[in-house]
Length: 342
Image 1 (cartoon, rainbow, N blue to C red):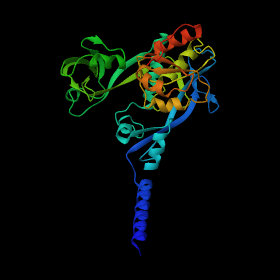
Image 2 (cartoon, rainbow, N blue to C red):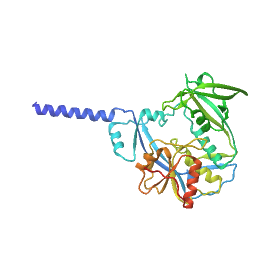
Image 3 (cartoon, helix red, strand yellow):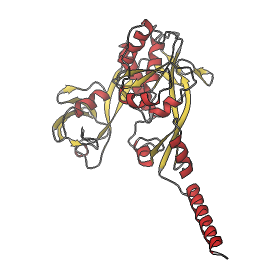
């Protein structure tokens, strides 16, 4: 065999090996692709998306649509080099590391993650607060981080009643009261433990972002004067805002959309604070050709959303549920609203 033929065969073998490796070898990445869009004011599977019992409801038209994405990664499919390259080249797809996906609970929710049922409870609480419909709530210790300041003194089941002497009225409020200081500062925590009041002084520590924390996971225990059923649970953690707006529209004669086609996203705590979502560019891609003209955008996601928004899409910046309601009312009346700007 001549040298040229041997070199050709060696080169061909290398290409084959590299090609097989690119297909077979699993890589620690997760691919995100646009999922379905669901009008929360409409129906899912032949049933109203949100059903309410125990309270008067009102008809609402238009769309308050949430957008979702699919996540593919280790444990559900093999992510190879070709799939990653294709996703990187597609403006509508996203690629994140397996570590980021694990941290955000996209593939396997962490043990201390808030459950979908708890997220729905927080959404209901936020909506009822906005409408000033009273309900009962307790902020309960779900768990503590091993080795953390809280682990030494707090127990699962403790009911948090005050932080630095100020009454605790919501999970979101409790978090802000604890986080509203620098790492290494004292915080006084008061709890109800089996009917007895206990007070502890803890030294905060820095979390990975440098904020103060004591290493506790809190959950809300709510008693509502009504029953809410959500027909579709697929939300990737970013559906709280749109769920709450639809519930508000059902419980009060507001007609928030005025008949317009509005979409949006955002996490929501029980105090009504709107948070960022994962890879909003993938969610924006899912809106192309769907008819939405306005997108309610978490303030923290504005810059990324501006880069991915379909032509003609108006991005309305929101940071709270109350702000979102005010923005929708202003849009209906033709008044200016805060928008995402570069």
